Image (cartoon, rainbow, N blue to C red; front, side):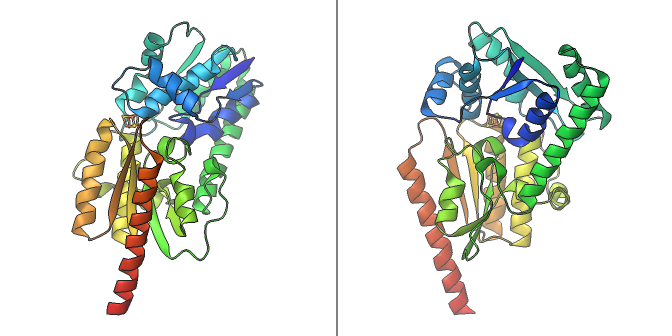
Length: 318
Ligand code: SF4
């Protein structure tokens, strides 16, 4: 039995859990190919025109798996904690795919709504295992291994690695520290983000992403807004930005976003205003399927140069 896992959206946040769980159940996991022009074009062809690029990409990755596997895993990601849900496009993803893709009949739709108690995740795993006629014991073992795998993945980030990009060591003699905030499916998909993280590292910057900041630290900034945002990934981005702004552990912040992203209209504006108030350099980079590489390179180089000059100027004044 082969199970296809699209390399898009929630994949970048949870793939160690997803892959390990299915493998431990005894299924063969086939992850869609890394994003390419062909996959983007395939997604754009069938997705609704006003969808953001990550959602279009998900369509492309599903098409990449069609005909190669028995089932394609499509999560309907609703909630993983008590305070927020995921963006409406995550909630409606299986419906969008069914209506947009002809002959998509082998979807393994899994509704993930596990915000009320920790036990819910296991019972969800058990129900998936039952679909494949696996025993309670098998489900329990697969669940435990998957949890362990996700824990190790998160720990790698905290140690300064970026596992989805295969980066183990950051530049030791970096003279600029940069906080990069954005959703994992943008930051860690090197094709769609034009490999922005590696580019900045090559420019001599030390890069810190939201996953590299401990959860406990980010949670401290939940009180910064009068009201929690509705969306889980957006809260993560915003709290990380507040961490950078308050601790001043970085010289500048870059927000990586997608054209047409509703939640980011709010998130980006809040970060911009807060950064302005604290005189923290801030840059927004927005991507869609038409974004050109050269324009992005020029803006990144200019931003890093500006930060270097600023640091030299500050050193002279002191
Ligand atoms: S949060 Fe934004 S980028 Fe992510 S799926 Fe929703 S609209 Fe698209």
